[in-house]
Amino acid sequence: MSQELTLFDTNDHRDRSTPRRIPSPRRDTHTTNWQPDDHLITAAQAGQLHIRNLTAEDRSWVVAGLTARGVTAEDTATMLRCSLRLIKQIRAHPMTAVSHYAQTIAVEVETTVSKEKTKNRAHAYELENLRMTAERYKQQRDKLIDQLAKQARKAERQNA
Image (cartoon, rainbow, N blue to C red; front, side):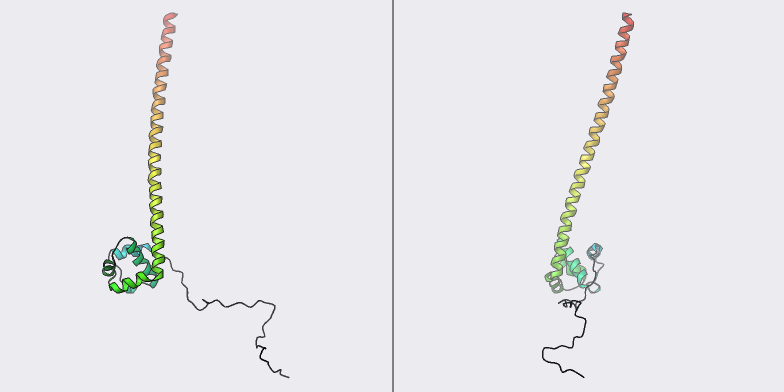
């Protein structure tokens, strides 16, 4: 005997003991595990890249990297063999802004680390100089003590 459905009934016959999962608004989006490649920027500067061969993420990364290094949009277009308009569109893309921010932070960190390494090398050099000076003073002290001991023995022999 079939039961007639009312307006408030559903055809959902699943187990009610398990909570219903709310669908994500981004459920149908496709994500990839993209990693930035700094060698792309070097290759672009050498004129070895063509914009056609880059993914959207790589395009943003390269354009942001070249922009962060002070390369003009015209020069970037020449390096990547594309139009100035395309470079300006890529620069306006949110991924490029994120890439530019990340590269700016990376440059700041790299600069700070480099300064710290230089400072540490200078401290290590200064410390080594101080150790060598201390060793030289110890040797001079030991020679003076030996000379004084020799003079004291000589004086004892003369008095005896």
